[in-house]
Length: 334
Image 1 (cartoon, rainbow, N blue to C red):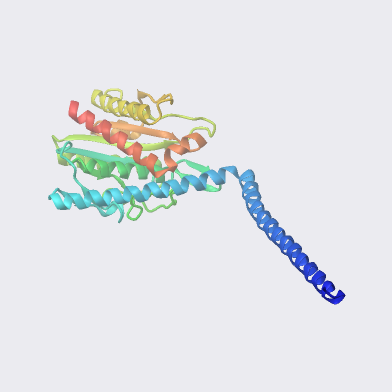
Image 2: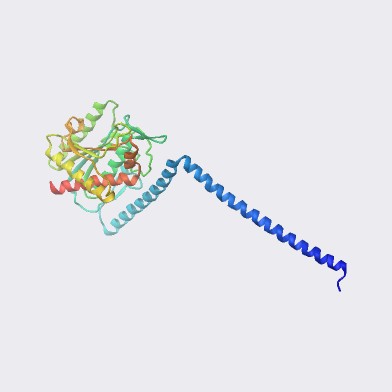
């Protein structure tokens, strides 16, 4: 028979056991509650930030996507160059495109014998129209230049002779969303760009016309690319201008216009494309350039919706590709 002392010891042991169990459950619950609270706090903080700055959250996602696409594009460029080297295809190197895009694999000779003069709007001391994306300034000349230099590279891939009339010695092809504004652009071959608008436009057309005389009877075309600056609230589409007396210039503009119609139909089938082709002989470059010329307005850099057309590198590349396709069609059918 157990003694009273033994019974008391057993009760004490059981009491200690229950106390330990209760304490264990209490701390476990407290630990779980703390973990859940931290996770809820993180989600709440994220939600709070997104609620305060919804645009910032979307931009971050798009920037990551752009970087991924840019990396894929650079890898594709590198693969194309390596494949060309293995097959003995023609390679050209143009430092103006920047290190990542300097080596160009000539894919075919569809544009062999053609000569293109490409001029992006403004440059040097004149940045052109200025838009704003948050606190960031968007300069017309930087975005027009990036589309133009991408077009130059695309034309070289098909065997064309290309002159970049407005040139930046160190920008190259850029995949950033916000393109840094600088003022070191020059006019071919290495002329400092004047601030005076008339002098600047005359310098550009003189360079083109001198080269035009050099190439004599070759198939020659000029493309000048701008980003419009209408009122901030006005969305515009891509417009193409030509000289009223130039049937060849009009045909050139129409071919590029059709390429844009087809491009938007493929990529954005629900979008209504409202771009037009019209004569605008009053434009200095259109009026004074000797080769048939098309003047392209890519959109309104001050309009939020239009800005999407230029901010992503993939979009700028698509614009360049569509122009290139139109130029190929024009040469094929001329």
